[in-house]
Length: 606
Image (tube, rainbow, N blue to C red; front, side, top):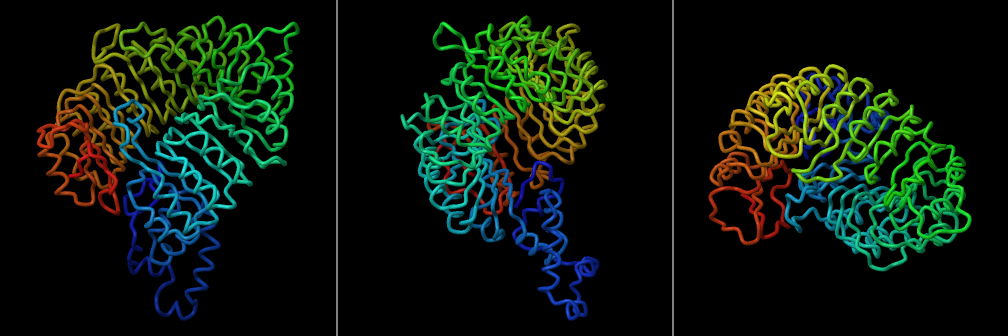
């Protein structure tokens, strides 16, 4: 049931029936007839319930539920938080039948490749059946966290009306709703603590949703609306911040000017996380506010983001808070190295850093020289075209590896890379758990030697023994995948684009990576033989996505027939021929309740 990102157990953690008790497990569960007479079942349940309430980890709870029937039953009764990594892996009814006391739900919808426009609109992942079912079963629900789901204003209205104690709503990369739905949540959820809209598509219904919050003191601790592309009522926002003494996180959209940020900071010195919105002035005034003084007053700020529509002359205003920052996000700011370096040289405590590649290799070298505590680095392209001249390269990545030895997670977009740089980061940063390298442009080799990038990625999987997530790109032969199968024993998520020579590449991975849960492949030469080579694995995986490969419809049908508990979706376009020979996109996932009922016309479920 709980498809946990960290869960290492087989798919039996999703089973709808309790596991049978073996003789040994019966002794451990005290379930033999003689023991039951001494300790009645309700006594054992009470004791076990008091123990299991201290288990917070989903992985630990999944393992506990597999011990025996009694543990399965009690674990379900004591679980208040449920994570579902695929909204089609089970039905809402199955959720409510097993877990009776859920207060928090984290639910994921579309696969990640939907972020790259590889999935047609209206594919599904509707929140409606989930909220309608939970409204009847969980009137005490307090938290909903959705990712890549289709959420309507009606869904939000039902949520707001059905859960009187509702406290937290987080919508990440969601769509389908507008400011009208947000207004209902703000108005009716009187105990709301968290309202975070993150990278979601929010329709502007011209509704003043900020004014819909309660007029008295609120419980708000976090408010993020930087993705909302609509003007807001600043006077109402200023009043909301003033009557929210518990507010710690505030992320503003680009319609909030720097002057307005200044006014908000003066009224909320308790903030720890700030998204600045626009970092420019809307009009010139005779006496310019002292922006640096406003930041200086916010002594608790440790996370800083925003900087949209940046005017560089105002950037030094953040210098007073730089010494305490642990997270800095410049991913929306086109900042040159000269603008950037005076800032980063003051950020010695930084652990998370996101930026555009406009900071260049020079800027990354400054990060390496200063940020010795860095754990996560993400560099995004300012110009994502394949033929653009990327300002970051292997020089910046190698500098980071030499200066930031505690690095654990990397996402790096660039135009050129070398095997030597990848070998260096694998040796200098052995604690890496996530490594995603996106070499823009197809089949690009080591730009110095002209060789494939096999040895570089081979070094990553060989030397970074804690690696769980890997994204590969550039010119890669089957040899790179052989390295992954040989050394990538903890890899759970693998993303592949424009890589490999033959079916053998994918076979190396499917046969050699025992922990693999999520496999994403696009524009690679893998066909029927490769797909069939993983049939022993698919029931243990969350999903497999393959687009623009070389799969035949016949092979996909064979897999569907051989694995009845696996949902095999063939995704095309509305005008696709049903008798087409080759498959445009294949999406396979395990499900306890069989194929979904809301598949659109362009989806064929085999």
